[in-house]
Image (cartoon, rainbow, N blue to C red; front, top):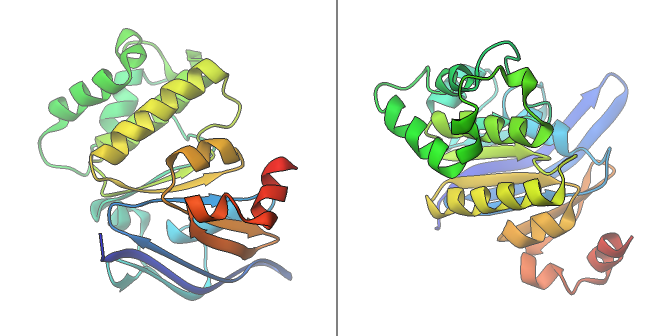
Amino acid sequence: MTDSLLSVSDLTVSYGKVTALKGIDIDVKSGETIGVIGPNGAGKSTLVDAISGFLDYEGSITYRGQEIAGSSTQTLVENGLFYCTERRDLFGQMSVEQNLRLGSYLNNGGEDERLAEVFELFPRLEERRSQEAESLSGGEQQMLSLGRGLMSDPDFLILDEPSIGLAPVVLEDISEALTAITELDVTVLLCEQNITFALEHADRLYLLENGAVRRSGATESLQSDEFVESYIGG
């Protein structure tokens, strides 16, 4: 686990005259789960939108050693990067199975095997495989979003607020699935307001506040950091 899969250097993103990210530096090594924590409005979604090719930026973002500026999202997916947005971006009038199969549209072969793996991970999706996505509960839609990401056979999975709005019992299912995903050596970038959830899964953390990294380091070391403790407690 020595090679950097993703490197973000001096990243600045602006919306008109408003600077949302200010000189962000983040490094993600292959096989790691990295947590980006911070309150609403800290810049977490802006960060992953830029990494996923949706925003223009200043500075540098390299994935597999190549600058992503000018790369299409399709190219990034073809290179193993999949972004599960906070919005989930499901096709509401398509079935669960149809949504899942769309996740593998850029891959050649292995679709049925990956579908079986997703159903093993999320049995509830198999039970509802013929239902329209819009008829699912919020937790089931989150499972579907994650499942579709896994159908792309990713090397690097970006998750934006996967725990948001979920009941505790559903969150436990998502947590177990995330543990299983990391055991498959998938690299994960996890953006979360739910600090407890991030602490449970992340190897290292970046604390983002007002568009800047305020603290970073190994999860265990940051748990005893006074600034992080005050944020967790607040």
